[in-house]
Length: 151
Image (tube, rainbow, N blue to C red; front, top):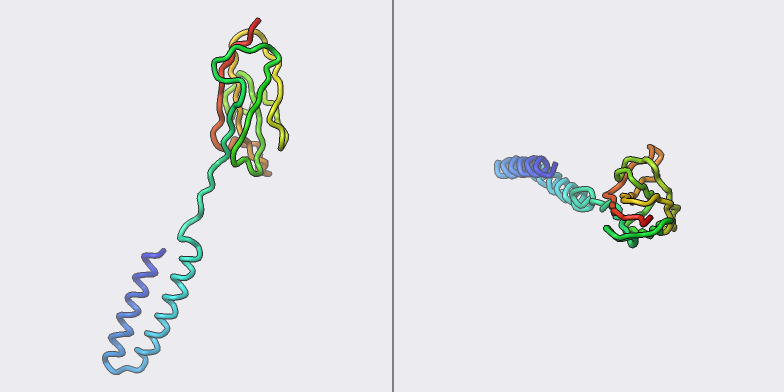
């Protein structure tokens, strides 16, 4: 877009200068209009910043349990988040992040819960999900820890 704008403006200025050099009074008018158009166009591009700002997705992570630890049941799970904004957090045990199965929903300010897990090895996942009207979709990257529940 900016390249097309530059080409049009340079061409217009060249035409206006040529017409003015030939003693044509219309060249002055064209030159003035092209100058005004250049100021307005480049001001609009500058005001927009040239492109959309990128927004970093939310980041969710475990505070406890840590990966590879041995725990008892019920398992105390504490998570935290950065840039959560309008999203919420779900936990899942023994399913992949973002698969949407077996989840425990954490309310807006909630960061702690317990999970009843049988003895043995379990994978616990934390994932941010959007609160939009288009469905329940994972946002950003989730985190998974593996714990050994003592029997």
